[in-house]
Image (cartoon, rainbow, N blue to C red; front, side, top):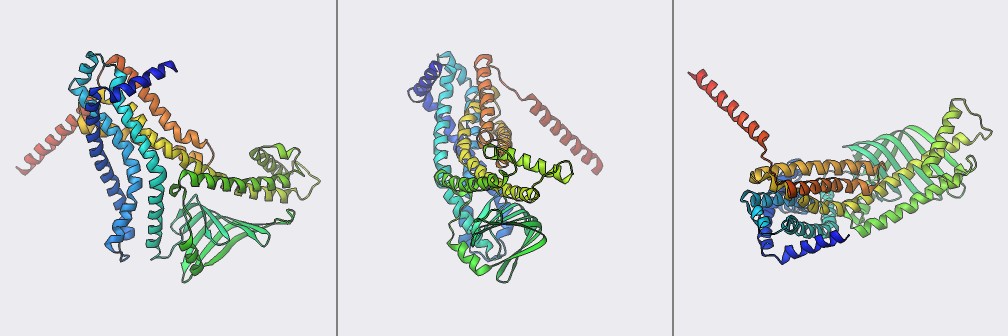
Length: 479
């Protein structure tokens, strides 16, 4: 702890009290601005290519199209700033190293941490700004962008169903879909919380969504309808079906959707998501109590078991009965087991929703914190690379950024399905790159070696030779 306090004091002193710090800040700021413009342009162009076909042919005014891209600029900036930070740090410290200014500073008695301190402070400031941006500005822009997108798509009536999220803007229904390919749906759950004292939950392996005149139609296939009397849990019915149709009037739906303030997880502030988590935790706890109530008559000590362990026991006993390995006097157990498993499926749907919100909460901090981590990686790399400028800076930035987002997206998928905790899913990429950065700082501080990237030069030289030989072959052929 004492050593960390000394480092913190050095960083503060050399970040603002040392004349060389202002020089380093200037070296960072201009590449940072340039990098933001370049990265934003690339991401915006990619977004334009992916969405332009959805806008064409709808007779939209130019103002609406410009507003559509303006509202989507927020998430593009949220992605481009961390990457621009890495590019700027690589270029700034690379140029200082190339001109031997790093060596001159160290010869003048400035320690290595002090040389890095302006970059670290720049990363911290960028991190703080992006945390505010991600929590206060980005959700509002995302929400307005989705509303505008919905209004545009309403020219071709469709339903605002996103895979992996509850749609709660349909009166009396909550709808969850695992996957969606246009009109084709997979893993459909339709939940009616309260209908004259009855809870109705519909599960279907697959389904199809159609809009016909003034109605939205769900055609569901291979599923079950679970109906529970909330006053008497014993009155539980399960109806299996090959095909089931649900018809919703479009006029009523459109009215609810227009008045609805529903937001997705990426359209919420941290406060909003915490409130949503509390709401889903109450629903989950209610379902857990139902499961325990139904199981306690057949399984000893069910009240004190973890829900996952209890479900494993239920499934195992059900399988043993079906195979004839076990006989129970209670003939209702198989029916009860089916009810318990059905309720557990709904329990896990709520758990996945909670995990999604927790992932987004951690993401609002972990992605901005990557600005600091990228400084720890980029500064020593820039010093070791020295030559290469924007090309090498961009190449290394893309490599580390892709690596970072592969871990981030993979962790998000694992956390959504409760394989890992949301905290570790979102912070592991930062911890791994921070460890790499710490090693590079230690290596650069004591070894003072540079990376020449000779293998890149060899590849470029080989490509030039091949290009020249092909050109000569064409000359001989023309003769």
